[in-house]
Image (cartoon, rainbow, N blue to C red; front, top):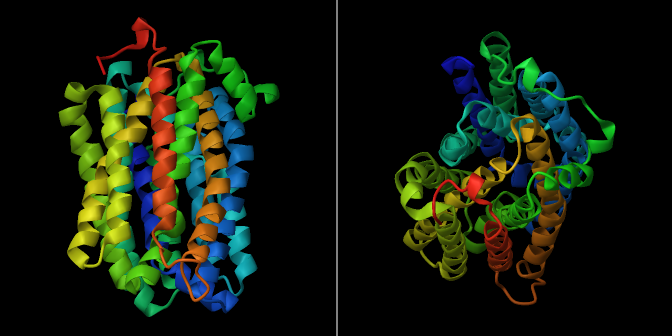
Length: 410
């Protein structure tokens, strides 16, 4: 069993992943506008295609890396991911032109397996009935990253749009050094399986995993559609805040920090306190309803208090992903956790390929001087519709759960 320090390093890997992502969010719109010499609505479209390129590389590479982690262990995959993350931020920090950002996103997408390997690591060391809470800790790391990352990025951005990228690179490289000396392997040799190229893509992996449980495809589909809904925030929120309320980097950073606080509280404490009483099905339903309610609040928000009310209500969406992933991880055996997480991440990447250009295109149509109707929140309302589709897929899969993997009534 890995030492407690190793669990802390995995937490730190996810935390620093999100810290780096959060640090650059407040300045990325301005950097794209500066490098491409375009207004905010066009910058949002460019950012959407950058996100799609990143996700396309993840779709291709995540199943390969997930299968490699089942063969060689989680440690080398996690360390390689963190090192690549640092290189990516350095490339973006030195970017003199927009095409450098494109290269940086491609590099990050090819090796961006830290999430799938981290979830597989947690599944390796956690009892099946405790995985929702443990996955919630990873979500808590996500939340903490959003607490401190955007706030730091907003402050660092006052020194120049490139500075936050160098800060993110430094964090990632420091975490690589820490992990190299502290992180221990979670997957013993007797639980590993041979690497097979034939299974190193999402669809072949899912076909193999379906043989273990009929619920897998439903839950992976639900997670994929949920990712399509959730990707609206990193894809468009900063641009939406600029267009709707005239926010600058500091205001964007502060608002995203509150997003992080609410997410950390829900996933770090809410799952532990309320999930045993709610069950996964009610928790996911509550999260989707909160997501939709927050989208409506954003659409009508005309004051700062209402904006922050929307953020706090939306925090309850933190129940969704850990609950679905916990049920799904219990549907397959220990030697297939990396394959499951890689396939799930790859399917989620389809949402990330489609989502950013979709939402940025909708945003461009409903904001700016040539808007059909001035409603910058339209992408958030569309995302709420996708969240309800994800809920329907999840509930259909939950109806098929065999008694042996039921942890509690829903």
